[in-house]
Length: 94
Image (tube, rainbow, N blue to C red):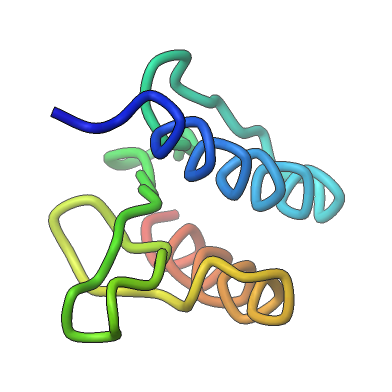
């Protein structure tokens, strides 16, 4: 089970990504109890993104698509990389 402080730290990173996506005009829903965001897509399954630790990257937090690939490190300097990847995923599902 995750340490609540650890979950809160990852939720803060998801919140920062959520704000960046909202600034680009996306409707974003955030889970209350876990580090997860969801972008509804009118004609397909929603895009879901989590913040988890990647052991193969030294245990650093990364954004990743639920059920899919890693997106980018969950640090501020990579936030725009994550936004670009997520925008591409949303566009592919429209």
